[in-house]
Amino acid sequence: MPAPAQLISTAIAVPDNILLQSDVAAAAGEIFGPRFREFDRMARVFDSAGIHKRHAARPIDWFREPRSWPERTAVYLDVASALFVSAARRALDEAGLLATDIDTVVTVSSTGIATPSIEARVSGALGFRPDIERVPVFGLGCAGGVSGFSIGARMAQARPGTNVLVVAVELCTLAFRLDEMTKANVVATALFGDGAAACILRAGEGGLATVEAAGQHTWPDTLDIMGWSVDPEGFGVIFDRSIPPFAEAEMGPAVDGILGRNGLTRSQVDRFICHPGGAKVVEALEHALDLGQGALDVERDVLRDYGNMSAPTVLFVLDRIRRKGLPNRSVLAAMGPGFSVSCVSLVAAE
Image 1: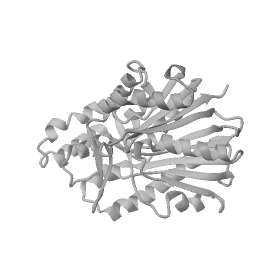
Image 2 (image 1 turned 135 degrees about the vertical axis):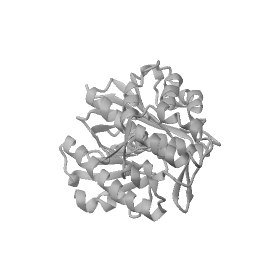
Image 3 (image 1 turned 90 degrees about the horizontal axis):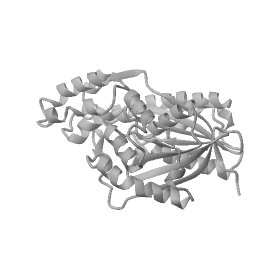
């Protein structure tokens, strides 16, 4: 049986522009208040989201003007490429590798469209070999960080000794819409930030942790819970208010099923490393997984400092926890469009 994949390194990167939540709330009041009758009632979401600041592809004033899809795409290509390079270089440096040592690159992103995909656009800047295998992954949203990690681990295990770079990069703020007077748009404005995370995986010995198992669960008839609509100005957020109660009711059995298929139980997990989609989602996950209030403390810290960056966010949590010291067994978990949950079990190196 081939050796399991090892986590070799992790790294994160964010844009330079910082959005303080207080400034975003004030700007949202100016933009939505006069035109959206329900905004005053919804404005408390900016205080209850659990976010102090976020990083964005552009300064706050850029979002005050109408933006076309071509404008948004130009920013996506520019900033996503820069963040990819920054996160990848940091992961390579930490692993003691060069870009020429990477055999496969998995790129996870659902907040922009790029053909050729981002890893091809930055290949020259990073110095990838011409024979590198490219695996772009689109459409997994918030679950993409865990699913991309799982894909990278399987590719590393299939070809022992090769190095797999996984990069999740999302520019969620580019989905902000001046034309959509909807609750979903207001909630997204209160939650979303931009960032990238990278990790390197390799089958063999000597990593930070062993990738023990992975799995997914997709609930039937849930396509309308989360996703994008596509219209002339760009992506429009689909963000159902039922996500926290859905997570509280459904996440436990789904995770138990994934663990059970891999011969594990929840009692054997020392730490769940979860995607902090929002303060209410974090609380719902603590209830769903019987973790106790406050157990997902690092998740709350990442949410406070970066907001919900979609796919990279759970890898920000992983990066922060592993720098403190991974527990014996941890399980990455994230929910995303589908509606689905993706999990990966890690066993820390001794």
